[in-house]
Structures are given as structure tokens and as C-alpha cells.
Amino acid sequence: MLDMQDIECPYCGEIITLTLDASAGSQRYIEDCHVCCRPITVVLAVDADGDASVHVQSEDDT
Image (tube, rainbow, N blue to C red):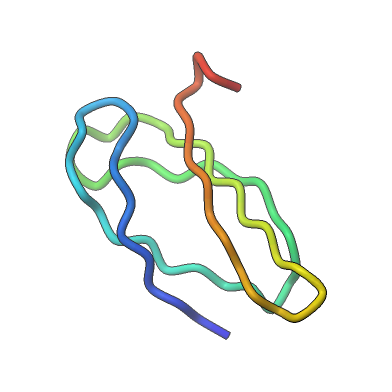
């Protein structure tokens, strides 16, 4: 269940592509921006139908 998702870095504003694995259910983890290397908190929510949505935030927003 790998999915590619384009997100905007909350620090530098660049669009980066994340590879999301929804097979483990909802998750919260840190991934560094591929452009500015700052830590992005990734919140992956998987609903009962298996549909995934992603939300990202900076360290200051957590």
C-alpha cells in the first residue's frame, strides 16, 4: 500500500514527494525535508475504508 504524496515543506515552502505506507495504519513520524533538511512531523491517518490522508507540520506546530 505505498502511495506517493506531494506536500509543501512547512519551513522552506518547497514541494517534496513523500512515500507513504498506509499498511501499518495511522502513524505519526518525523521525516527530514529533502530540500532544507528540517524535521517535518508527518501525520498519516487511515480510515476504516483504508483511505489515507496526510498532514504535515513543523516542530513549532507540534
